[in-house]
Image (cartoon, rainbow, N blue to C red; front, side, top):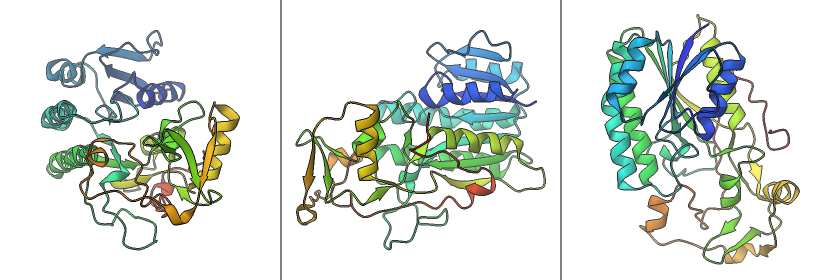
Length: 312
């Protein structure tokens, strides 16, 4: 089986991914600056180091024959808070300068980057956003991930047989991890949960286990399939606001939810600072717009079987 290096291996995404890979028989080299729950598994090697520690990460790449690098560090829902600072941007830029190039030098055959749906420009129509849509990152986090995408693409262009996969992942959730879901029905200004009308508008999310299945799909894909490039990785159907409310009421403590009239949909000012730095900023001017992302291309790799009703 292949040997997979997972950066950010102790975070939410990295730890679940590492466990799933180990269960499938892969050998995993985990890198993180905090301890990993997978330590003790005979197929798991843990490198406790900050991701920007070039010497430690490069040494791990050289000491182990890495087939695939899955780069989840410098990502939200992993080690970063929802507010992106200049320090986070500098950290990501420092990593981009070395990690892809050194991976190729070490003979890594595939690099999978966890990126974000926020890279796309605001849609002008109600058509689902596909991988060919215009890119115009407006938040600090989106710009940070777009820079990482470009750094990977630059290295892959002259890397011979190494393939690069960019997974533009929509906001992650699980049965127990709900901050991204909750952000869509919560107004921090009024400090309350809400829905417009009956909540019959939706948002595109990604169950964490759909992302994990996608990664495993890339690792096991038929050799005749060209799988490199950009993929939208998300649930196959949007989740309605009213479904989020019912889910949180069933599995979490939600409290009161205010029902608002569509006629009082709020707007934000141009250049709003919170929208730029807060990954979970809820733009109340487009909250009912039903913006969706098309995962047809990614469905050639994975079934995307997980959804709100069966997530674990």
